[in-house]
Image 1: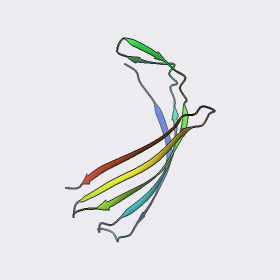
Image 2: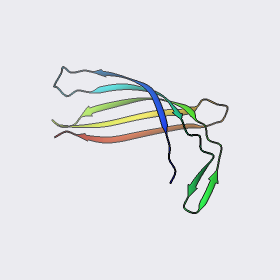
Image 3: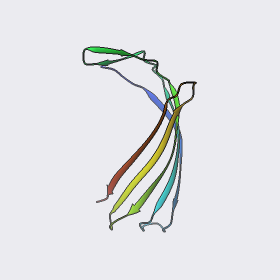
Image 4: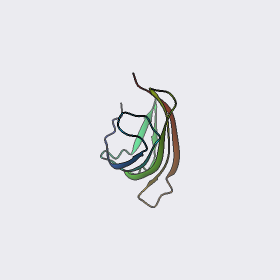
Length: 103
């Protein structure tokens, strides 16, 4: 079993158009710095070992939105860009779409 220990430092700024208790469209920005405390030199996959150079510090920046679709439901989505703080070419764009249900 492999264990991973990561720390994150981040900030999220949110802008909402409604008063307290009302549903509204919310827009947020996301900024994170991630750091691996354990720097692995390989990954175990079943009976195989994969060796690769891992970067242990990287950043993530993105924007997100929450849109109400019913009294207790919202559609949420975000788009983020991720890169490492070294000379390698680790760059990733990723996105998420979800349905938030309150009861």
